[in-house]
Length: 482
Image (cartoon, rainbow, N blue to C red; front, side, top):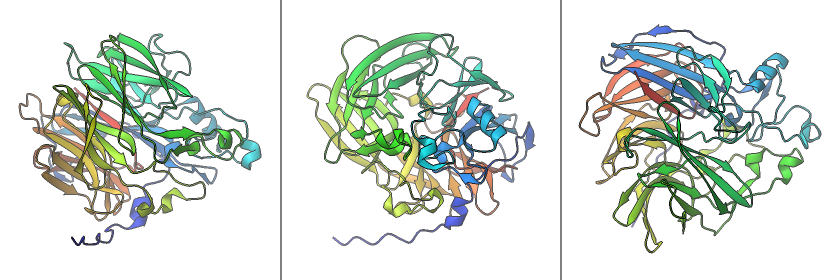
């Protein structure tokens, strides 16, 4: 069989790299109108997005954008109208570095303080940058960074209220995941399920479940052998599903001021990761089952099917990283492993795992209808590369039929670059794909960001809002219904 070579990339690197910049404004309640189409009158609530908004200080750039300070962007929808505001999370480190106009802390992903290794050696402090996710819990908006406690914000104004220990649930400095999962009501009421990790030769996972009002409903701790590098997990009605990647951590370079902590991670070639399956009801022991080789940051979904547990995840052949001497704005995508959507069927009786490729196209940031979280779903929505083969920046949104493999694509190429898509069900909808997909898009032609609203069923363009704001490539977000 002859395989045709992949088409040449269809994007201009400068368009992609121009999104990496400092955000110099904080907007307060700016009314927006659609440049194309119309905002659906039934769309009511707030889209929150988090990501790095400060990438340079005193002429020095971060080594990796994940080291940038967190900035929240909020788009509030009501009655066919939209309002925009954005605000930096006033962390202790952000305030100190704003005043000094230089980096005072090292970054997890390799950013160093001025002064070389001598100035950085043995300084093991980590700045809580609150840049990874933002979710609503009770009357608080939480800006999350998984190595420490969350910051509480005002959901309306985005004003920083300060570090939150969630009414005593957390200890000061305790890790709190930046990737919670929202149970739509498998146990009678909606819940936020999340975790914290204490990593080492033996790692501890603390599994927590909260009511929509923020009350702690369940709390358990579980110990596992091996170093845990966990960003995401999945849930079913009965299980919390973790994938412990086969990685090692050698902190020497971090201690000596030569590397960031994340740069001290390395894959273990030829070794398998482990599925850690924790019963959500707290009864019985967790299960450990060998996982297929590869590296996983994010999961799409998981569900139970008889004696099998099905987990859909985005797999990389190896841990994708940027070397110490590489400018992240000049990274060669062809040298970085590409993410692909893979389904693992775990036989809970035998421990056997079957692996199936669901989506060969480079993809990331996948989600199902939130009402199908933890249940079998027909559809997934994800950010994908424009090319069907080859690793590139994410420029399109794909709706994938998880049963037939058929898909539809909306593209922002050649000058647009997409972020994580969020599927928002239409109020009262009965069809799984009845609703909208909201996506923040970097528009290289405008050097600013657009908010694109797509029909979730057809991926037809419903509306495009041209924001008076340049939002750098970000991480995660959520939608809080009105």
